[in-house]
Image (cartoon, rainbow, N blue to C red):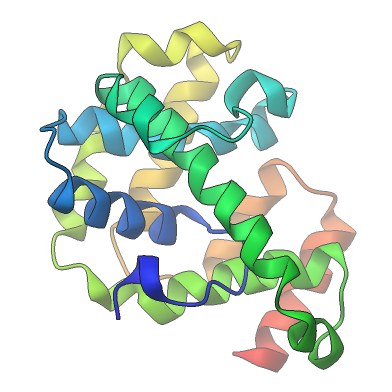
Length: 193
């Protein structure tokens, strides 16, 4: 099964978003600028450390046709929102999952991390993909995040993607979440990994 055909168990973290984006790019009849599309599909979650309103970086139920009508970065940005929307539909159909694990913010974040751990080896070009984040692109400056935050986001994402996800990667959540929540995520990760 491809990632698109799998039953998604938690809203994606960066590696899963990129894996799904790669599958889309490889199967799309339209040829996008891969680097800009990948940066675009990774960009929306900058909202957490930048403290932006979700509406500044996410779009309400975009369609594949809308994505295909855009270029590079904007298409990737819309694709991120489409993947998130599909996850919400899928996750709410996973009633059995809600009875098997705690249903709280710490566990939801833990599931995101564990998803990336589980699927990371499905892509061979992580080094190239991490390299996309060595520099920012002008399109990122249009969504309300200071340039310094965009640069920091790129550093974090590049570092994260450059190796298989690890326990220490939870530290990046300290950029945007209360330390008590991060500690709870660490505890869940150790329990369920």
